[in-house]
Amino acid sequence: MENQDWVYSDIVKEHFLHPKNYLMGDESKFDYDAVGIVGNPICGDQMKMYIKVKDDKIDDLRWKTYGCASAIASTSALSELAKGKTLDEALKIDAKDIDDYLGNLPKHKFHCSVLGHEALADAIKNYRER
Amino acid sequence: MIYLDYAATVPMLPEVLEAIHKAEEKYFANASALHTPGHLAMNEIEHARELLAKAINAEPSEIIFTSSASESNNTIIRTFSGHRIETSPIEHHSIIEVAQKSSGDKLPKLYSYMLANNEIGEIQDLSKIIEEAEKIPTPQHSELFEPKTEWGKPLVTDRRGAYLHSDLTQVLGKIPIDVKKLQLDYATFSAHKIGGPVGVGALYVKNGVPFTPLIIGGNQEHKRRGGTYNTIGIIGFGAALEEMLEKKTWEQYNTRIRNLRDKLAAEILQKIPGSSLNTNLEPGKSLPNILNASFRAAEGESIQLYLDAEGVIVSTGSACAAGDIKPSHVLMAKTGDAEVAHSSIRFSFGLDNTEKDVKTVMQVLPGIVKRLQEISTINMEEN
Image 1: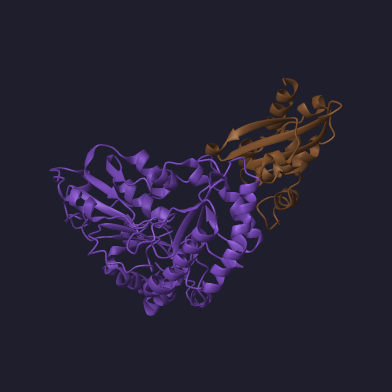
Image 2: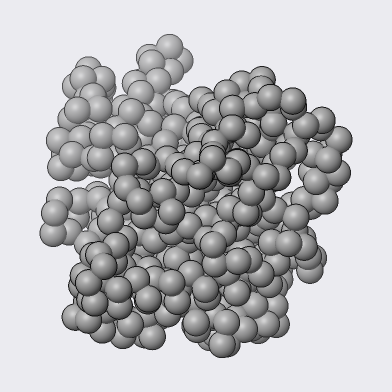
């Protein structure tokens, strides 16, 4: 961390500046099977995860977030981690996996912004309960 | 880079850098020493003291140098430890947190109200506080009135039921200050908000009012603040004050900088859907260099860091940026709306900013906000 000129690691910066799999504008633009949500704008972070399922696998997914840089980066990272996984595998992704993938977020950021996996779990639950 | 975070810190002025470099070579000695190099260093400190006194219409003997505005604030609040302490909800944490710990029910009472807030620039009307303070009866006995000089003379000659402190950290250089007209007993200042170095603060303590040192164990500052003099830092503060007085910076803030600020505000409201202002632009209601705005459905830290990536430097009242779990207490006190606080950006101008800077901000800001609004879970169409 010592020599970097940005507040977060390079990989966080990359996912923040060029996030993957986000959903711009109207959610009907993405043909999803289920959606999950976590967080609250009052707390400063909220994520929504939209999944498309094929053969019990996450065929494709999109997300939306109202949140800080690490919320955007961690949700983007999660979307990359979850793509192609079976629903059971996807349910096993936890905050630590996301943190490891991003090369460790600052501690104070961890609890408030790494929430995407909970939105994903909520989406999978909603998919199974359809 | 377009720097719009002058309320957080002002880059050191070239004149300050020059004064500091010179001081490092010339005024190295301990300013409390009686030998010639020590005496020369002390002369420079006294010069800086005179400049601050002149800038705020006080006596040099009423100025105490500290390490920071936070130390200055702590010193005054702790002087009134166990006493009634009243502050506004928009004070700096170095007032609010200490006041919560220190306040009691004894008299005399301390009112601590900043003249202008650092986050939204709001100017508070102190006249109502003064009116209220005057109604409080002077206590017969108070340990605050008891301290005596070595010759047995009472140190506190101005005995009252209430005293007024104001944190003027953001005000110095922006609007003219007259501590007598403001009827202040104590005031806080900081060098780095006017282009001086970080690590130098000051206190105005009116002659004859109660005072308890925070740092004891030295004769410095007439036993009012222990610790070896930060000669180089104080000389830097002096150089910044000299520039401020010579250029009458408050005149530039009130004209050119106010225009830039108002122009940015107008453009934001006109060109960015979901934007709103947290700063009252009316003259006399806010500092002319601060603009705080919120952008619906777009979170402040993200806006701040996308702007950073474009070379535009601002700050935010969002919790995330502060490493806190709560958003800005100032915006919460003013709006009562956490989303407004989380979505806020403070643009604070300095004398180096130009119209071109406003133009550049408006080239990048609308797109950044739009993108965040489009990926946001908050629907812009809903109320």
